[in-house]
Amino acid sequence: EVSTMARKVIKTAQVPFVLEPQDKPAHICMCGLSQNQPFCDGSHKKTLDEAEGKIYTYKEDGMREECSTDGCDSCDSCK
Image (cartoon, rainbow, N blue to C red):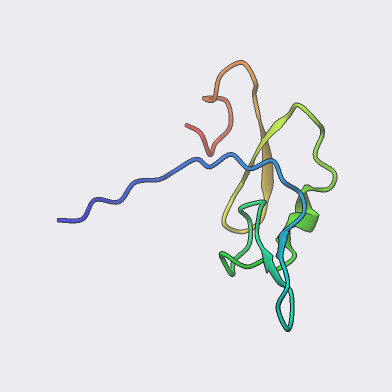
């Protein structure tokens, strides 16, 4: 039996990692939001207005929710 488990992955990068040299550079997702993992699809642009020191959760539909820093039971995604 295979068990499934949700994971909370904390990513802080707001730009992709570029693999070079190649015929065409490959951009590796570093924000964790790409729907084309492990490659960048531009989803990191959603993170550009995040406030430093804040924690955010992104839902599958791309909506962002700010988490409380006093414990991770305050936002819907962490409950």
